[in-house]
Image 1 (tube, rainbow, N blue to C red):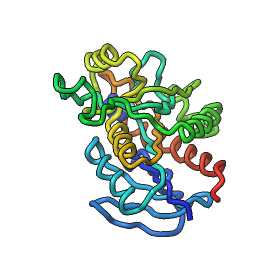
Image 2: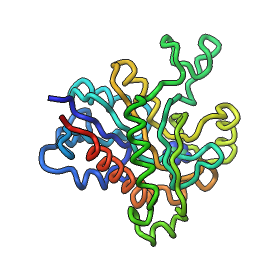
Image 3: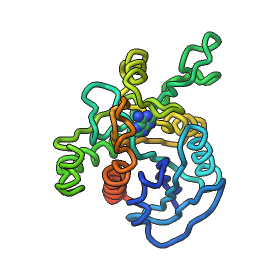
Image 4: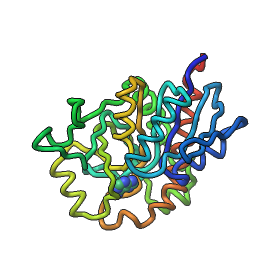
Length: 254
Ligand code: ADE
């Protein structure tokens, strides 16, 4: 039998819609978290809330790998847009992830994870390609997914999919000065969040495929915290649920 696929988000608001459709089966408690163990479209799935930040995410990933034997991890949820044109309601599929708050210089180059030789950890290309295709299809009709009222409310006229660098750190970026500094230091960064690069590092260590798909909830500026929780619950959670469902439905379970 195939190893289960892990679906992870940091907060209840980000994964609530998917957890609501996780059928049958059981909840397992480990490391203070609840792991929903079940099936979706014939695939064995373990869904879990990692909680917020890099350590929480790394712990969760390690438990998924060691205790549940997952064969791939997909991280979803929200992120702040950094690059120009990465707008609220867009989806970013990470091709690489970096910890923007990791700095052991001058002993190691800035951002490099000491003793690994890497600052940027690659995601799995096939997994990311498949998720990006599904995201592009879903975003063609945001009204079908969210309803006209939500689309108008959040101004989500023509959302698009981006692929590239996502950066993670133990900080909610909520000032123009801080996001400008990230843009200056990491000009190719598309988006910022608080978990992905940690999970990418763990998956790299274990040799397990990883992908990260984030909905942009804010522009990591002075207004970033405004509608954050409501956006996560009303928009991002439904994106994640539709995305994971459509992706698993398209992927042969064998
Ligand atoms: N996740 C969503 N928005 C974010 C931001 N502005 N900073 C860090 N993580 C985020």
